[in-house]
Each structure stands twice: as structure tokens, then as C-alpha cells.
Length: 454
Image (tube, rainbow, N blue to C red; front, side):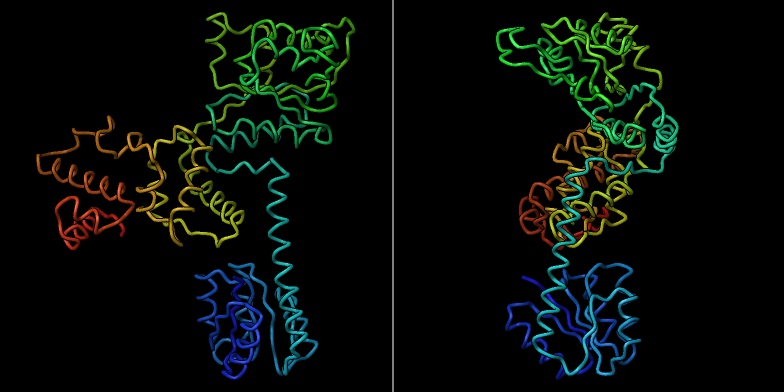
């Protein structure tokens, strides 16, 4: 239900507005001062604010200015002493509209409806823009990410071939996209090929196309990815999985800037910049006879290595907050706060799945947590595979050498046992207390001692 906040120090005005808006099926919250209104705006999901200008202690303009620092909620300003100057100042500070007292019922309802429709359109536009544009910002300030950004600025304007290396989920595709976006070919197509996802017998047809009748299922002519990328960029992802026969043809295409479709004999000129990516060590693949050295040297004019998330844990707060905001907007819910202890807990996880794993984890935390994401939620929900958590019971990462005596070990084991049981019960204190044979008070004291928020 749409929620409207009324801030006005006159009770009769608040009561009248409440009656009118509730009759129109809006949920209404009303307060008599600006400070309380700002607190509600921070804590609740408010869709629209009706705010009086002349109020004691904190006037409406001050409330509007303070609110715009942390919220995009539209304000309709109300005043019984309206002037053109007041209306202009309200608009300059970000108000959606300005209404004079006594309020005209029809104008009030039309203004409220228009303001809410505008909010809906803005939210839908943001979501659609994100869905249409796959090129997101490269987030992070760690040395490795800063070096990547500098390399992109230098390399992108050229036509030099680039080989992007890094683990799965680390963001290689995003680097390739920015190399294209910042190049002179940005107006041309960016064609992506996942070499690992295409069977070896079909990769040549996928890359170079085929003529009708060239093989059994070739019922019509097909244009390959090289031709589709003409005038733009071809991104060969996971090129380390490409067959040797396809590698030979790719090498020839790069040398001669020409291709021949499967089953054809006509040479087709191409103008394509190639960016390749792999999660494999291609030098080892060359030694094993799985990758051509001459193709490696053709592709690796510029080498860009994308560090794993484990190598750039200082960037986790930036990434986590960005993902949190993006996902909350997509779900049309207020942006949830990630507390400092929760962020620290996230930084301590092993992150074998890199950026992709972090985003999925933040989405899970948003769905399962309350208004704030705390350390407790991270311990409960962030990593369902408890064996990968560095503090998990039974983990090979437990450092027994740091425990000076048997009591230290007992305390350690008790903490992990209680947290494990609490996690399995999804934070249900009463159920956990019954299972472990403690009273709720005793369990809460122990959890408090171990720094677990309840």
C-alpha cells in the first residue's frame, strides 16, 4: 500500500488530510514536527511527503533540505503564507510541487497522484536502464583495480588485441565491455562468444559461419560471429577451451583479416578487434599441447589480469553497498544498511566464487534479513556451505596452535557449536536453547559473550 507522511504542526490540518487520503486508500502517517518526520523517513518506506513550511523549531524548508541528503522521496510543500518566492525556493530545493492553504481538494488529490506516478516512472526507468545496459561501473579502489582502470584508459582507444585473465566470476567480461565502450568502435557491435559453451564440432560454424548444405543440418546460410562483429569488437570468452582446429582458423583470421565460411571458398574481409579472456594458465596449456603458442602471442599484445576477490578484500564494502542499493531498487524496497560488523564478517569469508558469489550473497541477505544486515545474518545466511567458512566447525582452517590451553579450545568449540545450532534454527533462540539444554537467558548470555547479535 502507498504510504504518505504528513508533517504539520496544526492538528486540524493533519486530521483533515488524513481523512481525505485514507478515503482514497492511502496509508497515512502524521507527525507534528520536522525532526520526527525525518526519523520516520529514514526508517520507514515512505512514498510521498506532505510538509508544511511554517512550523516551530524546524521549518519545512529545513526538513526538505535535510531529507534530500538521504532520500529521493518527493515532497509536496504546503503553506498558508504562499508567495512566488516561496514556491520558487521550494522547487529549487527539490520539492515536487507547492500548494497554498486552504487546500483545494481536487488539486491536492491530482498533485498527489501525479507525484506518485512520477516516482513509479523514475523507478521503472532506472530498472530498465540497468537491464538494457550490461556495462556497469568497475567498482573498487584497490591497487589491482586501479591498475586495470588505468590500463583500460590507455589501451581502449587503440586497436590492440587484449588478453584478459582471471578466475571465474572475477569480472573479465566487464573489463572487455569497458575496452569496447571506451574505444573508437563503441558505436559498432560487441559480439560475445563463450568458447567453453559451444561443442568443438560447432565452434567453427559459430565463429566463421557456414554455407547452405555444407553439412547435414546446414539448411540455410549462416553469418558467423566474426562477420557479425565487423566494425566492432569480438569478445572470445574462455578461449582456453577452444579446439586446436578452430585455433588455427582464428590465427589465420587475425593474420589476414579475412575469413572463409564453413563449406565455402570465398574469402570475406573483416574489420574486427579481438579481445579474449580465459581462466586458464595458457602458458601451461601450451606446454601440454592444448593451445597454440603463435595464437597466444597474437592475442596477448596487451595482458590484463583481473585479481580474485580474495586478493582485493578492501573493495568488498564498496561492492557490497553498491549491490545492496541496486538489488533493493530492483525489488522496490528501502535500501538496507549493512552494519560495520556484518561488513567485517563478509571480508573474512573465503570468496571462492568471486564477484558473482558476493552479489548472490548480498541478494540472499537482503531477502532474509530485516531492515539492517548484521553480523548475525551474515553468520546465518551468507554462506550455506558452512565447510567453506573459515570459522566453521570441522573446517581445516581452524588454527589449533593459537589456543594456549584446553579452556581456550573448549570456549572455541562452545562458540562454534552454539552458532551452528542457532544457524540451523534460523536464529530461533527458544528452539536452540531447548536443543542444547540451556535456558534462553543462559544461551543469550553465552552468545553475547561471543559477540553474536540477537
